[in-house]
Every structure is written in structure tokens, then in C-alpha cells.
Length: 33
Image (cartoon, rainbow, N blue to C red; front, side):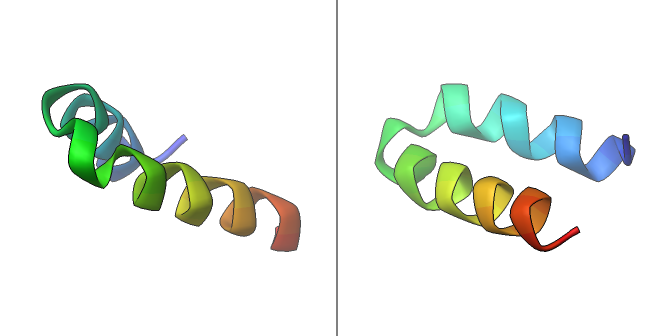
């Protein structure tokens, strides 16, 4: 798992507003890959 992904995970917890976007990006990326 790329370190950048972990950083985004931390950002999700820090910024509830961007949480939904991060979750969508993570889900889409994981689905595509």
C-alpha cells in the first residue's frame, strides 16, 4: 500500500468534509485495480 494512501487516510479523519470524496476515490481506485 502506497504511503500516499495512508496520508490520505489521515486526511479523511482530519477533514470530515473531504471524507466522502476520499472514500469514493479509494473505492473507485480499488475497484478499477
